[in-house]
Length: 147
Image 1 (cartoon, one colour):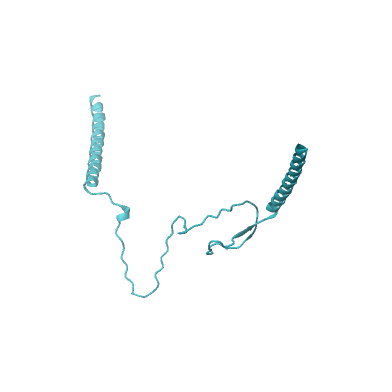
Image 2 (cartoon, rainbow, N blue to C red; image 1 turned 45 degrees about the horizontal axis):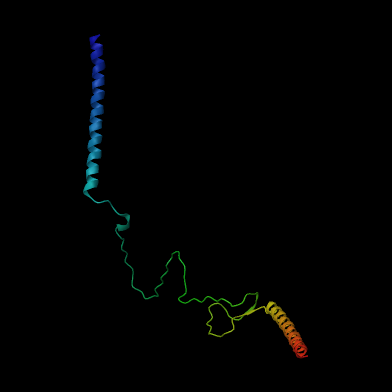
């Protein structure tokens, strides 16, 4: 019985020695690689070596294309604000056209303003008629006062 236990212990001992050797090998392998990484700086993908090509010299136009997301704005912009509101009947300029002060740029529908003007003229006539009646009443009261 002692020989059977001894054989089993030998098999386990070889297995234990094999596991220890494997463990030491892994520690040495990964330990040396880590020290190599610490010794040199990491490679930057932007600083990779640039390949150089040789071509023959020729004369041609330089074509520059910039592909980017953004917006283009003019150096000078003008914001137009009308003094009156209403629907536009016509525009007398085109986009990008140079204009000067005093140029006719747009025509607004005059109908609502003509109606307001007619109402104002009617109110003016009514007020003048009231003024005339008040002056006649004043003359009448002055005559009565003197009598």
